[in-house]
Length: 266
Image 1 (cartoon, rainbow, N blue to C red):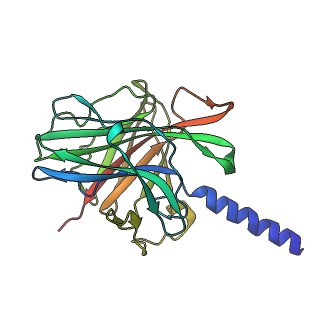
Image 2 (image 1 turned 45 degrees about the vertical axis):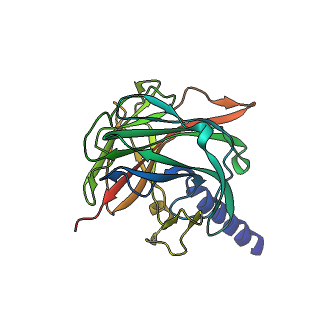
Image 3 (image 1 turned 135 degrees about the vertical axis):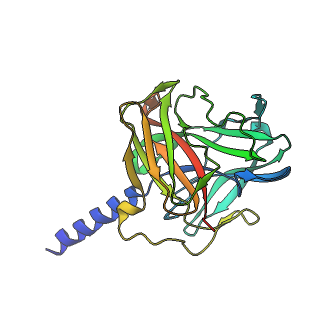
């Protein structure tokens, strides 16, 4: 009887752990910039709601920005390695300081090398986007980049009020992915970019594990809509939508991630 209870508790523990989704972050404090400025971007692979574990990022295949003129600026060689401190452990990440000069939209794109998840004996590769804007002039926030795995915003991603909605379309190599499975998480801790660390106190407490990682699905056209209940950063990850399913002889999930920032009504 004791063995049965112990096995059940272990199973529940493992299930709860697996319920916390992996999210590649490309974080900057502000997506809607009002004036020319330099902003630090932090690249961290983590669990943004629970902060239960920070993963070591592998090497970076590509990191660039599509600037307001539609030009691609390669930023990979300017990345600096950092150690990011979560509340449970520390992990390897990167940072960069970018100079926002021209009015308009900036689409930052990260293609990390696949990450090996030992617990699942498989690889994860998350193509991640975050979009910032300088001075409110739109110049291409909904641009389709034709990535292997991509979420294209249909809602301006830096102009979202708390209580409104975000709509996007899931695509792989420019083609919509019908009924894609999407995980949604809230960045639940303050971010200290000076110390490369998360804060100590969560902003929200989940009443149950299903509220940690919220599951939604795209429709037949690859589109989805999510109501934003709280101001802050929200991450959306469309799982396993890329064309590649194997890496080094093991399963590979090519995911698309986008981060959007909602503002409080005040």
